[in-house]
Amino acid sequence: MSVVGFLAVWWLFVRVHFLGFDLLPTPPEAFSELFAYVTGRPMTNGGVSLYVHSYYTLYRVSLGIGLAVALAIPFGLLIGWSSAARRYVQPAFELLRPIPPVAWVPIALIAFSSDLASIVWVVFVGAFFPVLVNTIEGVRSIEPEYVRAVRSLGGSDWDLLRHVVVPAALPSITTGTMISVGIGWIAVVAAEMLSGNYGVGYITYQAYRLMQTETVIVGIITLGTYGAVSSYAVSKVGDRLTAWDASGGSR
Image (cartoon, rainbow, N blue to C red; front, side, top):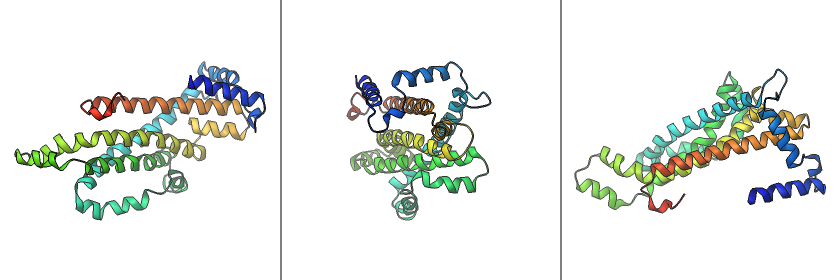
C-alpha cells in the first residue's frame, strides 16, 4: 500500500507540475525505461549494459563493507572489553569517526592509483565506524553476572569470549552492520560519481549531466533495490545468528 501511495503521489506531482517535478518522467515512463535496460539496451556508448554497471557497483560495495566488518568487529571487541584499549586506541577512532565518507573522496583519488582502491576505501571508511561503535556498546552492555558465572565455573578467557562476549554483542553487531550497509551504498554512489567509468552511481550522475531524467530514475530505482535487498539479507543472517535472543521479537 505504501509503495502504491508513493507511486501515485509521484505521478500526481509530475502531472500538476508541482515544483520541478514536471521535468521528471511519470512512473510508467520510468519503469518502461528500466525494462528496456533490463532487457539489454546499453546504458552508455560502447554497449555497456546495466548489468555491467551493477557488477562494478556490487563488487565495490561488497568488498568495502566486507573489509569494514572484518576489521571493525575485532577492534570493537577489544576496545569494549579492554580499558587500556579504550584509553589508548579509541581516541584515534573518535577523531576520524565524525569525518563524512564523502570528504575522503579527494584524498582517496590522490592516494590510490586505481579507481577500485579509491572507491573501496571510501566505502570502507563509511561502513567501518557504525560496526565499531555498535560492537563496543554491545560488549559494554554485558551483564556482570554472566562474567562472574563463567569465572566461578572455571572458564578461561577464551570461554568467556566465545560463550558470553561474542553472543551478547551479536545483536548490536547486526544493527551496526545494517547501518553500515546503508552508509556503504551512500558512499559508493558518491565515490562513483567522481571516480571511474563504470558503476550505477557513475551512470546516474552522467545521466543527470545530460538531463536524461529517465535514466536518472532508473539508477535511483536500481540502487534502492540493491540497498533494500542487502539490508534484508543482513537482517536475516542476524536473525539466524541471534535466534536465542528473545528481545529480537519477530524481526
